[in-house]
Image (cartoon, rainbow, N blue to C red; front, side, top):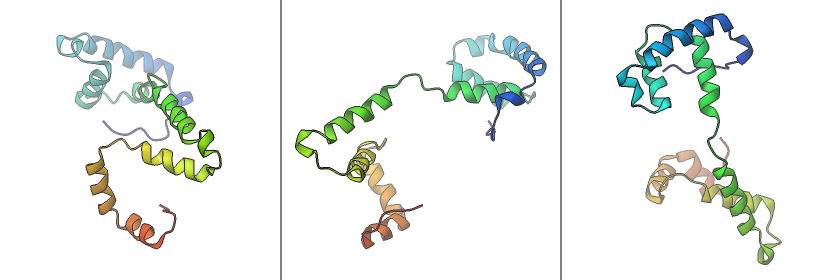
Length: 134
């Protein structure tokens, strides 16, 4: 699926969107699609279709970017609370930020270690004791 650049819901032509929806409705109800999850259906639809579905892609980008829960946000607040408890009340905001960024890695330690070793710029900044900048 192609990436949708700077999509704006105000640019959608509602008549074209309705026509696209009519085409999609017929395809989505096929046996192949019924057993798939919603995001899988749209990936199959957009990758295999001859119709560009430009309006529907724009709407889909917005819909599938909505988080299904606020668990990640709650986890960050919980980690912040534990990082800045009464025993550590003099901790600077930058220190808390750095600690939360380290705790928020999504990969296992060995994988992150390999990523860090592969990033020459990060290693160079770390050896100089400077903050990392992109």
